[in-house]
Structure formats: structure tokens, C-alpha cells
Length: 262
Ligand SMILES: NC(=O)c1ccc[n+]([C@@H]2O[C@H](COP(=O)([O-])OP(=O)(O)OC[C@H]3O[C@@H](n4cnc5c(N)ncnc54)[C@H](O)[C@@H]3O)[C@@H](O)[C@H]2O)c1
Image (cartoon, rainbow, N blue to C red; front, side, top):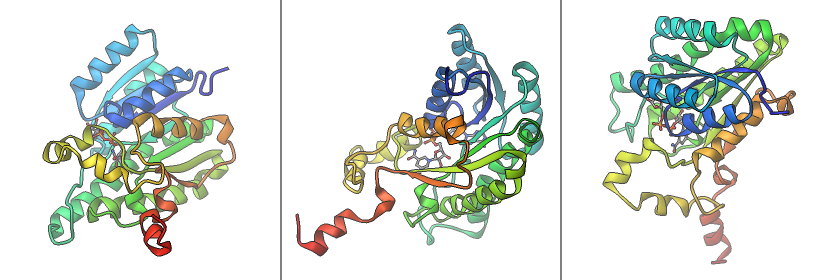
């Protein structure tokens, strides 16, 4: 028996790096998947390719910042695949302003409001199905929501999403809806393309900070999300789970200096 047999899942950011891996893993585990992303042509191409491989998928091209567009895209897709019991709020709407000094009131407000509001819109569009069926919501946060790694607007949004997950876990628990967060560390995805263009060895520098000695692959993030959506996680709700190669466990570079070991 596959982990998600027959379940209908809504995944946002579905044609991005992590989203593509989630979609693939969900399909491999027997789910039907609604692919939501702002990139309409890429959604169409992905849906055609997956359908040609025999998978049950539907496209839902929408900007998660637009609640009405999200709702109508979700309704059209669920009419094809059936009611939704799994939501993965994975898309982020940008927010790469690096420091406080580079932030302005308008930019900061946009980065926070869009990232938090976009996830809310996604969940809001599917919540009636989840209330009827029970289900699982997984928000993709970031280690940036748990400690400081730059990007003040993006990070504040990811911290706010921790609160949203906890609120949903408590308020929706009586409907048998679980809500959790996966908080990735660095993952090599297209989100890094512009930084890699500026500094091709950026990942080599970053991996030194990770106790496991590497950055994540999209599959490293997708697998725990599949588990959270499955029956094996039936009593896990309200959890904020770093998937970060040990980054948030402590500072192993500093430990070496403190202990004069290495
Ligand atoms: N890559 C990392 O190092 C990393 C680290 C921590 C957390 N994350 C989180 O993982 C998630 C996925 O990131 P990724 O690395 O796969 O990024 P990505 O850029 O590869 O994919 C993001 C996808 O979201 C879509 N998107 C952007 N704005 C949208 C909007 N307004 N409406 C609908 N779709 C929209 C994009 O078109 C893209 O397909 C994000 O929430 C991100 O914050 C990523």
C-alpha cells in the first residue's frame, strides 16, 4: 500500500525546485496532485508530461497573492480530481532584500504581507474540503524563521508562518486536520540561480556551516513532507521541524573554537 493512495493534494510552487520534488514524491506514493504555481506555461507543460506518464494531475495556475484567483483555480482543479485532503503551502512570493539597511517600509511590508497572505489564501481555498475529510497542512517555512540569517522581510514572514501553523493545529485539530511546518536549510534549487551566477562557489562556502557537511537536495525536503501527509504522522500536529542537516542544533564551527579542537 502506498503512503498517500487515492488522496488529493494541493501543492503550491509546484514547478519550482522543492515543489517539483514534492509533486514527484506524492505521485510515487499514490496521490493525485493539483499543481499550483504562478508560471502558467510551466504548469501546463508539467501537467502534460505527468499525464503522459499516467499520473492523475491537474494544473492550477494562479498567483497565491490573489485570493479570488487561487479559489477559482482550486475549485476548477478539485472538480477534476476530487476533494482535497492534503495541502502543501510551499510557494514563496519573493523577498530577497538582504539587510535592514536595504529594506524600506514599502518593501518590508510587501515581503511580509505577500508571503504570509499567500500561504493563507492557499489554505483558505481548500479548508472546507479538509474540514469535511480530515487532512494535513504542511507549510514550508525556513530556518530563517527560526534564527537570523539575513533577509529581514522574508524571515519575518517565515516566523509569522510558525504562528499560523500553531493556530491552525489548535483550531483545526477537532476537524482531524493536522498542521505542521518543515523549515529547510539551504537547498540547491532555481531560487539560488542568481546568487550562483554572482558567486559560483557559494554552496561550497555554505556547506561548511552544516554539521552534515552539505546543503540539501529538493528530495531531502520532499520526503519528510510526504511523511507528514501520511498516516504514519497521524498524531503529529503543530510541529515545527527543521530539515537542515543539523544547522539549528548549534554552531559546530564555534564549538571547535571554544574547545580548541580542530
Ligand atoms: N531553496 C532554499 O535554499 C530554501 C531554503 C529554505 C526555505 N525554502 C523555501 O522552500 C520553498 C520553495 O522554494 P524553492 O527553493 O523550491 O524555490 P523555487 O524558486 O525553485 O520555486 C518557487 C516556486 O514558487 C513559484 N511562485 C513564486 N511566486 C508565486 C506566487 N506569487 N504565486 C504562485 N507561485 C509562485 C515560482 O514560480 C516557483 O515555481 C519556499 O517557501 C522557500 O522559502 C527554500
